[in-house]
Image (cartoon, rainbow, N blue to C red; front, side, top):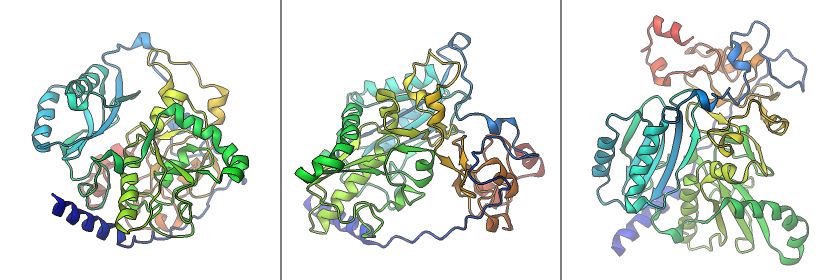
Length: 437
């Protein structure tokens, strides 16, 4: 056992010490004809985006009396780190239970546990979560639910064994995720809110006397931050979780560079909590393997931002929450209000909190916090765009991409492209292309 642990540690050190490739620079050129500083809401004259493109980020909700609770679609998320001796047998068992049930989503299992995000009618979605929790190993698992107002939020069901429960190069099986002492200390939403409220006092007065500081760390991607984030947190400089290098890079721009590890409380957050759990383990392993003193006070937001918005509302939060499904962006009120209590319109406070997004091309503020993929197949960047730039750049993120040889059509409204390889490999027929446009 000791030998196996030693080998895994050396493997981890090799992976962590490998230099990360520098992201390629990407031009940002404005082609917007509107005056600078004007907030974008309506599309440009003649824009092909259609009426759906000017809808608020909060779609019209179906009154509860018009929809049966059992058929109302919801999105369910949960994860749990625990040892599974035969995860492939677990996969077969889960697939057997889901036969005949209308479930779409991503459900991954391996020797370290389960990570699930799926959608379905409330009856089927709840039945699956309840079935999982009936297993004593999962009985204390946090299950989070949010509305899926346009039916399924995922195109199909992917339930399988996967070497990593999150997107991580080399998998995660070499990480000691099953050891709670190797993960950060979780904070309940109420405790997290208390820390946020005390942050200003720590920075202004108490820090001078006690020497203690609090650092807020967003362990997500840059495009997620663009949609919404906690006030005062630095924007991440990555577009994929596996490129995250807080505390490992040694770069001047790294918020953990030069931090007093003993006197700084580091509060990490992500959407649902699992990325923070994984990354806190990476941090602890890195410093332990390098024979250096690691971060002493690592904390994570239990259940992530979605759990916080449900329990505490948008206190300290600005904007919407990016989600990795067909909905893309959800306003904070989505998590707080009961499913049977849909308001007729958003409050003025909710409207004001939308003003955080900026167009990637021209930098103007945008009301609708939803992303699109660059029409250039070889770029595929996920970015926010105002109506003018979407029209002028033909759905591309910059002028260089607009001139690229392999372009997809500019899609109207909230339509999303098929998998990029379908266009890359020329698998679309003219009829299918017309349907997508």
